[in-house]
Image (cartoon, rainbow, N blue to C red):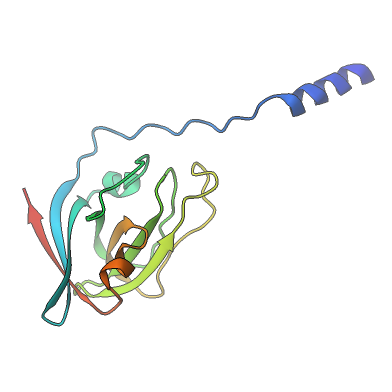
Length: 160
């Protein structure tokens, strides 16, 4: 009996432990498109092409499973009401920055979000200090590269 327990323990330790493969993105989820422009006063700082996540399913999937994103692209999350909910990097494979935007289209706060050691089981959550209506995910460092800081105004235009 003791010998069987020792062999079982050795086999359990020696067996490879591959992480579970992440589920694939849901192809039925569709994103609207739009353009965001960032202004400091009257000065245009940057223009960004965005996918728009308006539905619960689109917001839940977000940028999961993607391995890259063009520099001047992002995903805009639109909520019905102001909130303080946190974001996470579940199944997200590219480092991102997130900007939280007020209902009056003012950038409130920016946070960098790193890829998790195990993207299937994220440990870190990203929540702003104040309520927001919109959230924007871009490639990590985009805001800094474009000189975009909290307090700038944001303009959104839907595109076909």
